[in-house]
Length: 212
Image (cartoon, rainbow, N blue to C red):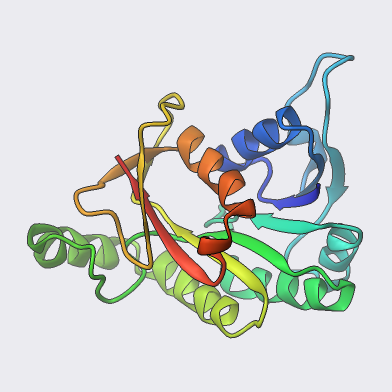
């Protein structure tokens, strides 16, 4: 499958690119600075780097052209939140090029309330997180709204706190709700789930909670 990955130099994006290449996919890495992509051995499979600022419609359209599916591992950057503006550009490019499948990364605290939240999380942790990272979560909420009304075959993953731990494969997932008690997930396991749901028909037009 030909995949375009946005946010390919981020903590989750790098792992996602590695997994996709190892699985035999052709990967276009849409990044602002291609030089930041990790160096690879000469014989190792490598992504096709495309210089792309997600705030630039034309660059996004060029990165999406020819893809079978798009994965967004975008998040807040040093310049501030970009998902609420950048992902609508991705959606427009996908529609223009006839690309249907979109997997995007959001966050567990984004919805005001969630059926998977335990009382302690709902009453204490969620309000604190939403107060501390209000701009980032507001940006992701805008992004989710654009995705939900896009008409594409989308999946939105909502992870909790991210860690740099190893891939375990021992994570839990839940459709259309957060994972009860799932307060953390490694970026490696999150990337694995992003790749897995590409072919999961049950996850199409659904949010997916994930956590340990």
